[in-house]
Length: 550
Image (cartoon, rainbow, N blue to C red):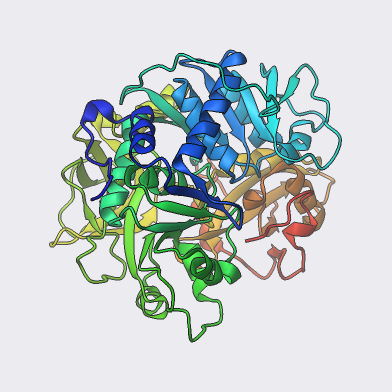
């Protein structure tokens, strides 16, 4: 594989070694393009990263520090990630849709040395009543669409405003065990957790992607996934670093423009998640859908009811996988095997041990029997060492020396892995994991709500939920669903805003007074359930500054 860095010795599994190797090998190869902007080479992106590193170092950022990135998809976002890593610090990318308590939690959990924000998001940080804890420094980039807001007790500086050339900075040598990033993922009964991602972990995910999607130097990626997720970072950007491939990014996913962007970019490989694949498939078929250069789609899952037709229609091969931020992607569909609808692939036993166990006893189950997936690495530092500042969640996940994924399924006699369902109360909506806790905390802050419970109900897409919120009004108060929804739209990111609201006299409970969420899920949507879509309430009309509803 020409100019590939995928076979580095383990001691060099760190981003500084990979960037140095790529820039030394192919500095002038095209690397990044956002939309129809100019294409930047590897050397140009590296130069921007060094410039940002110099500015961050002047602000006191160094080894062991944490820097939050509050921004959408952009070249600057990627260069910031590189810059922070090169300084030996850890970046914490925050979903730019977060607001209110969910945003407070992300920032205050990480306690960053400073936060770097995209200019249009400064108004979100300046919202009255937002508690930013110990944060005292914010840098911003991009075009301001209004006057620079004031942030109480926080110094604002523009990133990239200096014309001074980057000064010489002493960059540390990074190791596989060093923390690269803290990526947020939602649990079931609490706020989002910060997954610690090591340099070895990120490198291996990229290497597995190169091997699993057989990415070469002359490939072109198309990607519209948000950069606060692991997939675009490690399966696209980092994989391109390893191989010298080119990437065409978009800031947001749009199903109706997907095939045109694939064609215009000359993409040969792309990634997607189940609901997004279904949205693309729902678009009117065109006679030239297969007349592109696209040959491979990495997807999790590949919805079984459309997988074969999707391959036919777009003239590509779907590579289904199974994984999660904490453990990378242990399961890949071998690219030389034909489509097997519903199968997530086979375990990469060269890197991982894998078992399907009884959720109560942790004992292995027979072939074909459904149980919980658990994983254990065969090399140090290739899965998360734990959740940032959350030893309880770390201990729970790693009980009996295996990582418990919370996903269930089975393995057949031929070693094919089949994902069946999620365990617990986790909600999955449009490729986003959602904690019911965050929704309930926001809803319980409404003056008419006594208590609430959020659950996922089938959305119509495979392995995907819509959100149903059950609320109990305070005595003497009535809950207006539309007014409650408007309130929640100001408190939650758009992907957490419920579709359904039902008012109950009391929440169903177990003898120990725990809310019986299984009963709320099973009851689903009834004639008395209020549906924002049936009532013609669009999120884009509710959320200030957000014009997106997936």
